[in-house]
Image (cartoon, rainbow, N blue to C red; front, side, top):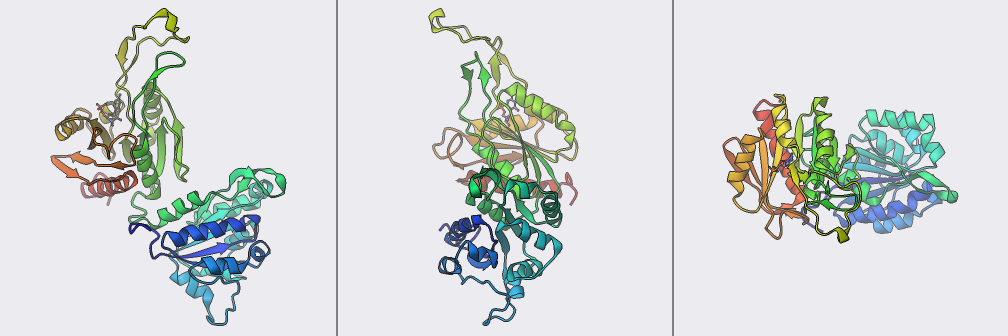
Length: 408
Ligand code: C5P
């Protein structure tokens, strides 16, 4: 288990409702325990029709509890809730959601939910008709308004052979949401609107071929994910598969022109922070062939023309209270190139990296970046791209507040 695991030493109450998906929370509990969390399972009476308390007792850090009137702890409902760093309810059935939203406290789980001040994550699972019923829709809205994190069900095969929305979200999604709760600096970007671009653009030669680049989009996706977990309202304009993360509004594009259009039509939306992590093509084909160019015609002459420079455009229309971050993927002189871009494009920060290093830049999961801003330089050591995003955003948010760009 990595020392940097955000779950290390965290106390988690895992509430299990009475739905067929209850068996999946065994795996969720296992993963939480493996990641270093202390997990206390709390099972509702109905859940015992689907799973056994013994399984949870054997695999959890503490024995499973099923009753309000536990003999060795006269007040488990308050002690569990008070000690918890987070409460996860998986699966949350329509009935459990209704009881929680109404403030009922008639068993150990609902009592713990009402007694706690820890963040709560509800992982809903039920039949499509139930999930879409106005009472469930209203109850979910009520819980969300109170700050409960709701992980909506996914589309898939349901009990009884039906298919539709209702299936319990994947363990990965639940873990990602809980990890977000434990993130240091949670709420750092609360109420902020953030625009992120990610991925390399593709410029068509003909309907089959394109000019592209080696960007995987991993660093940009890491920025969008970290910003969402810091509480921001994120718009992600990307050329690659977006993350499965709550709080991110995705706009999929392919070419530099499409990215420009997606960004420029949204500039009036009042973004507090713009992170231009995409590797945008600098040139595109002047004439795109509408049909596939035949090999038998011989090697074609491809004439290129410049694409719109999105970052420079954003710099030219930047409002006073917006932070603009550009990227510089370089193969040589890092700092001077980054500083030139900072000035020319009127950005506030440029994140520079050398893409020739084997453990940084394109496609790999790690990066080594240098942040160039004002007259200063800040070098971050080699790290996972997700941690780089967290560190850069933490620094930038602090800078924005200290320098009065954002209200304190
Ligand atoms: O000048 P260069 O392309 O190296 O600048 C890199 C930065 O500019 C990146 O942040 C990239 O997203 C942005 N860029 C852009 N539009 C272009 C080319 C680059 O926004 N056409």
